[in-house]
Image (cartoon, rainbow, N blue to C red; front, side):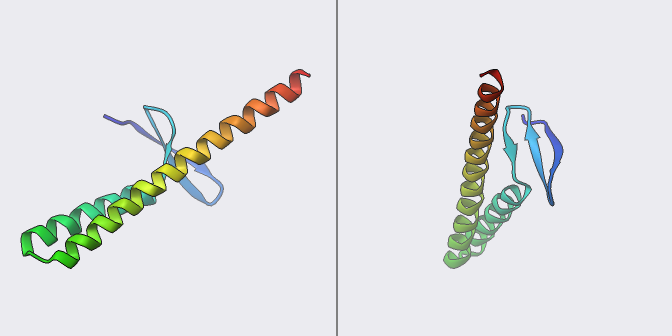
Length: 87
């Protein structure tokens, strides 16, 4: 289970999970929308809707990966700034 805490950063909001790292709310929406479209495609037998849902779900997953990479960059930048202050 993830606990989400809102954190404003500039003009958008990211959510801090209890497992660490930030989640982009748009990636969560993409995943939910994608899963819904996949399910609707399964129920109706519409292969194109299922494919569209899969693409949208993957888009959400890629946004999560991007947010993770941005978190790592911010951590490394902080590490460098800490080292600079010590020397």
